[in-house]
Image (cartoon, rainbow, N blue to C red):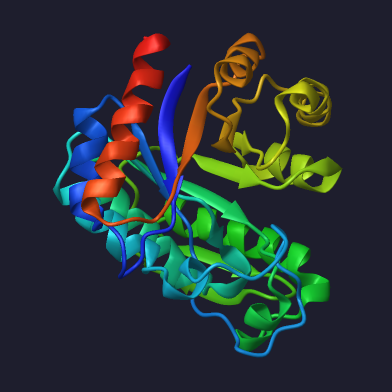
Length: 275
């Protein structure tokens, strides 16, 4: 079982280059960063975590620019989105951004995706929350076409373009790993269609085994599991290991450099116990 971190990179915390280097130095092998383009001031959608929405949501950096900076400061660190809000992204631009990150990092990009939860944020991008699942699936299929075909075209309900040239192509073939967030049969169907790994969030270890069994029943494959914002107590980590979890992403609070490095030193001890 391997370990990385999931975090919000903002203008108020450690920078992506310094964080990437610190992770590699401590034996953590992946950095997954969150995405929110903005947060509407007036919002009816409740924060899934309960209470007030943390300020990191509206101060988050662009994930691909930030991960590009981390790529330049590292050699082996996996660079992932956790999660990219596909329903708020143009698929042609997204295909280019992910492929460019994969190119400049020499094949270290991981595309973590989800349908999102903030309805007001989606609407500002012209997305109808009621159809975001279908929209996400079309945009992902279109993105994969752009990655894998020299002359890509797509004709669907939401995405429509005639043959185009779109470079660069990803270094990883056929394309970077796609980690699908969410739970339930709809997410598992997406995973079966175009995913490389399942990335559950907030599932207690004692409930995860049943959900993994269901996921693999739906997908029909031994799909890897990457736990997002996983628990870090020894009992939970042992449970993840017993379930065959491939990677645990430990949540890293957004803090200045010194406080972040102190927390990473704690995480390094966790990693060494499972080396």
